[in-house]
Structures are given as structure tokens and as C-alpha cells.
Image (cartoon, rainbow, N blue to C red; front, side):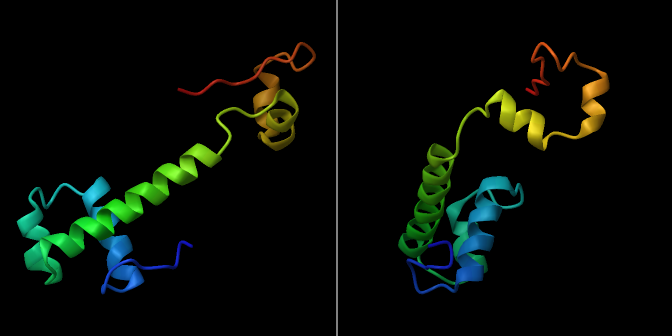
Length: 94
């Protein structure tokens, strides 16, 4: 599904547009993207909305929290010296 496109743009163009729109700070108006990609505003909006929707869908499917057993299994063993592993303490990153 990640390799699908919803516009006449290539997959790479859609992904680059989405990344520039989400994280970039060089283009602040939709007209700037029109000049760069040579597409209409309608096509660009459709591509951006499609990629943003896919991002939100992926976030909703991903578990918000891992169980302690999963956390202990996958974390770096260096963290064990900082926390009491017998009581189930774990690192909480914000």
C-alpha cells in the first residue's frame, strides 16, 4: 500500500512532497509546490492528503505502549544497570 500512488505523480514525487510538506520549512505556500512540481493545486492536495491519511492510519494501528516483557526483551542491556529489573522498572521517554 505504501508504494501506491493516488495522482499522476510518481511514488517518489508523492513521498518527497509529503516529506517536504510535513517536515520542510522552505516552502510555506501551496503555490510554491505548484511551481516546483508542475502540478495543479488539486493534484498536490490529493497527494498530501493521501500520505497524511496513511500516516495517521499507521499510527492508529501501532501499539501505544509495549508490555514490560516486550520492553525488557528489546531494550539495550545497558539500561538494566540504571533500573531495578526485579521490580519491573523501565525507562519512560517523553
